[in-house]
Length: 223
Image (cartoon, rainbow, N blue to C red):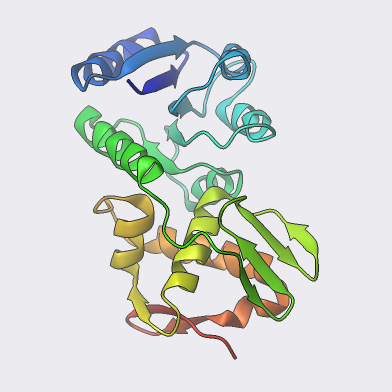
């Protein structure tokens, strides 16, 4: 049974999410601040964390940053803010998804189930990929350029591996959303563009491997 940790300083929000989590058959755990959540994650493994951004003491961003120092557990951020900057900042720290308050509990659970399904799905083609000075190892979630490790968020790495597995194929934004995020995205597809922009930045001299196909999507092509 999957263990889900809900971190929010509002008991009402935690209780609402609890009902839906338990209805789906998942195990519910809760914390009312980021520090308590951090200590819980250090003590035992969880399958997914739903993490509020605006909290006293340790806020969600601080908590996510600290958790990412030792764990790649999937994290969905909850926040009252909807600005693009906040989304980019959360994704850059390694958030897997982002839900703006007030939210639909049913939508939140659809995202929870999609992420858990994606995480549990068997990973195809685990061989290390090499192109000139670029190496990508799906088994260790590690990318290196000229022998030096480059830190990628989980979503950036999954995008890169998916591109490599589908070289020379034009891939639409909707396809990327459905494969990497695991659901029909609620909103526009700018989140794909945001992640690819960050991925290109981390690829450095190899950024041009990912080509924009205007009006369609993207293509990974060795040059």
